[in-house]
Image (tube, rainbow, N blue to C red):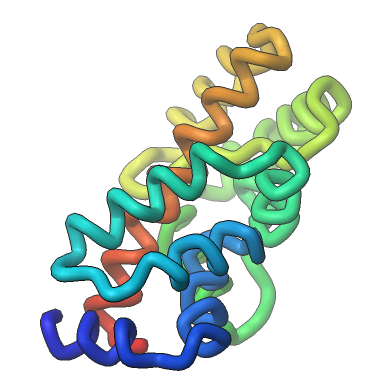
Length: 166
C-alpha cells in the first residue's frame, strides 16, 4: 500500500481527482481531497475524505448520489465504480429486488434522490428494512444519514483504490 499511496500523492491534480471520483462522484470532493495531498497513510487520507464529504454543499452530495445505482439494481458498465457497486450489493437476492424497487420509488418520491446505503455485508432483507425505517425520517435527519452513508462508502472505496492501485 505505501507505494500506491506514494503514487497517488505524486499524480498531477487532475489525475488524482479522476481517481477520487471513483470513490465519491462529487467534483468538489475530489478537488478538496486531491488538494490536501500528500497523505502519510490511508488513515490520514480517509480522515480527509470524511471531512470533505461532511463539508459538501447539498448540491455536491446530489452530484455524488447521481453516480449510484438504485439499491437492488445492477450497476452498468465496466468502470471501477460500477464494479465496486456490484460487489457492494452482492447480498441482494432476486427475492427482494421487487420490494426494493417499490421502496426505491417511495423513497425517491419522498426525498427526491436515490436511496443511498453502504450495502457492503448487508443482505437484501437488511437493506429493505433500513429503507423502510428511513422513509420515516424528516428531510434534515435523512440528509445527515445520507452524508454518513456516503462517507462510509467513500472510506471503503478509498481502501479498495489503495489496494488495487491507482
